[in-house]
Image (cartoon, rainbow, N blue to C red; front, top):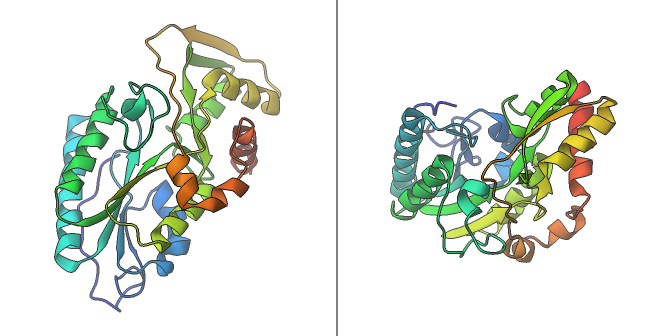
Length: 270
C-alpha cells in the first residue's frame, strides 16, 4: 500500500475530522474506516492509519514514503500540541526473536524487513518530540479487509482447494471490532509516551486456521506444507489487560479464533 501525501486538517470547526470536533484520521483503508465511528470521542488526537500494512510489503520505496508521512504528521502534531496514534506490529517480524512472550519492554532483535521498518518508525516517532501512543497490533480480521491480508487470502485458497502453509507458522488473530473497542478505551485514558500490544495473546497454528475454514466451508483442501525457518511466538497481553479490563469479556483464549473466523465467513458470504 502506498502512503498518501499528508494534507493538514481544515481549520478547526470547518470539517468533521478537524481537531476541534474529533480526532483526525489520516488514511482511508480498512482500519481507518473502522475507526470513524469513535472519531468524535477523541479530539486532539491524530491517527496515522495509512502506509505499509502487511508483512509482505517490503518495497523500499513504500517504506520510505511511510517514513516521510510519519515525519510530516508527527511534526504537525508537535507544533499543534496534538497526540499521534501510530500503529506498529506485534507480528513475527517484531517479536519472533524474543525469548518468551513478546512484551512491550522486551529487548528486540527484529527479524524481517517489515519488522525492521516498523521498529524504525517507532524510534523515529519517539525522537520526534510529538506526544504519541504506539499500538503494536496482532492480525486484524473483519468485514471489508483487503484481499491480500492473511484471513481473506486463506479463505480464497481454501475455496480454490489448495493452500500453501509454512510448517509451524502461527498467527494471533483479533476481531477488528474488539480492536476498535480497545483503542477507544486506551485513547480515553489520555495515554502518552506508551507502547501497548493489542492482540488476543493466543498464537494459533495456521494449519488449525485452515482446518477450521475448510470445515466451515465444507471443502477438502490440499495442503502444500513447506519447511522454512518459521518462528513460533506469543504476544504478551499483560499490559493491555491491565489498561483495558474490558478485554476479560472479549473471549480471548484458545477458541477465540473460531468465533473471529466464523464472523468473518458470515460477512464474506454476505
